[in-house]
Length: 502
View 1 (tube, rainbow, N blue to C red):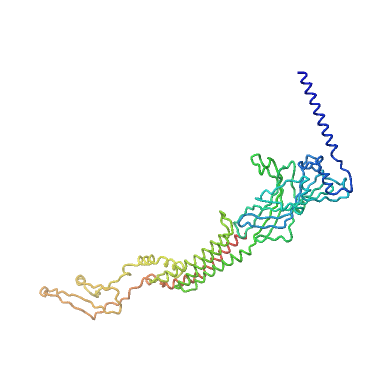
View 2: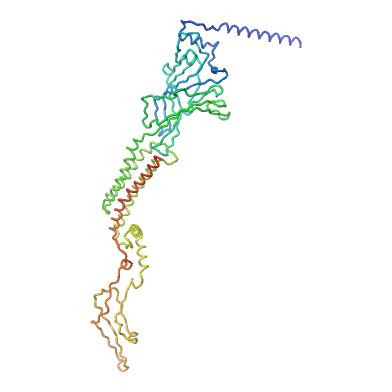
């Protein structure tokens, strides 16, 4: 046992000596940085990033303490924004993205004082440590090329690194289309640390973080406002996001406030639809019985408006809520359909034969009697007495007749004779004498004139009612429609545009 322990101890001492010799050899092989005026930028960068003193897999130390997180400052120069949000709910951004951070390991002020700046492209990018940042709200993004013009690295003598890259990103934007086409959208562009949490790297926005190109112009939207924000995103072990480790990760974002250009929709949708609705009112000035022109006018306006509206609605995504454009479509459709219904109603009334009795000539009684003419007549008949519905006159003038004669008189009932007719009275006289009871004498007095009577009053005269012909009622409805429809459409517009702008 003692011999085995001695052998193990000797082996351990031997391994330590080998490690010490290898480390010394490596240190001796690492060239010492010395000041030289003949050193080129490429040679200087290669010396600074030599594997013996620089590991690009390790982040730079903090500005004060080596354990502090490294601060990375970002800036974006945006020169193109293309929106296709109406169908895809996405928009494209082309930008120049710049990251600025301090790497003390690349400091060369004492080594190459004659150099003010180191510049490089993809070659310099492959030699140094760079922050790993991704766009978290994009389905696809790509660096626009791999040449020097697309990636530019500059290092100043203090070790401040500026990394510039051109980026093209397609971003998701959750549109809210309740007020389409007068909507205002807020679409973010979110950058997030990929592998380093807040203990190793923190993202900040630099001074003047967003710069817009002078020639920047959007076709469907206009850039109403923009702002930046800095935050932290927390992920648990069960919410590993794109390969993230658990923890807090630094995040910065740009929010674009985009207002939709409404000129296209006003000129191609709203103004034409208003004119179509106004044209449908022309039928109120046509004759009530002019069926062909009024039908053609009504159907053509509805079909034209449907075609116009379908062109706008087909360019939008299908959403579960009601949009402002659909409210306008529904309102205009109701007015166009109501104009057709008004013609059908007026034309039906115009073809009626019977006059309509009215208690008063106003909208209430005209519409009530027009819609329920039979009910109105039954009501009038219910209110009339039997004497008013039918009158009978006696065939005898019994003003001076005795009681016994009254019991033996026969009557002839006459209905609705003119008052100017001389109606004869018929009387049968029976001989009261028993001896003369063999017969009876019938006397016809054609010269007797009963009391004059007036002709039976009509149904309207009994209750102070007036009558209107169906043609007069149809014309009255058309005249009222010329006022009611425009006023109702103006009220609808006031309510609609108040909802849009409030």
